Image (cartoon, rainbow, N blue to C red; front, top):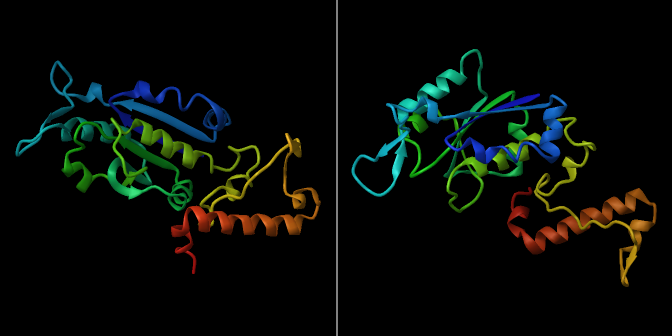
Length: 228
């Protein structure tokens, strides 16, 4: 089982992603546990302030140390996190290898960034891993957190009906997935490769591997650079 705590100032953005499909199945089976902690109650003063102007001037607000630290310390009570993760555009690029590694964790804490970001002192002294889901900027870290949880959660044994499915996903071996087909074998004159109807598992496996290599070479040649 894996447990996620997610710190957010917009917890409502995370309601739908975890209530449907594969993640909901994992939650219902008791294989995934997700808790979203609203940062706002930890805010300062009567207005529950969680952000302030940045030192040195400049546009954009910064998430404050005190509310965030109080929230983290409350969540840490009786619990040890394998990683405290900050979702940020300048973090390490998320990939399948990272998802595989994080799926072996027991407890993960995810911090959703907002505004111009999180006070650097929290990043330097508390955060253990910073992750980006791509070279673009979102309005907040909630969508990135949902992507991260989904990519990790589907790897937990028992979450997928067919556990071997995740092993053949794109990027698992630095290769893209091969083309796939289903019934009918002839649709409007569009047919499928004959080998898939041969019943020869060995030849089908070889064909799929060749297709993976070809597709990766054509679409993501950079992935082949990772192979020895």
